[in-house]
Image: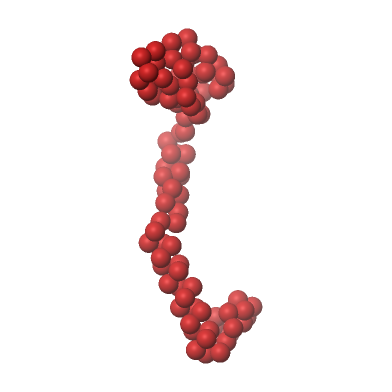
Length: 96
């Protein structure tokens, strides 16, 4: 299994890399054997996992939050103008 790491070398410089190990603790040992101090160690993601995480990374970006806010206000105003409570829309559907 592949692990990616961030570590500090003996001069204090931050290094990044990867190691093949059976467990996180074994990866930790390999990094220490190389004369570095591990800062973080994570299991490397497969290409599919990377794609899925990138796809969901910006789930609620600022534009989406703004659009959701505008939508919520619009529904609220429609409810006030028509006299129909939002609960009615939720309970009975928008078109019924």
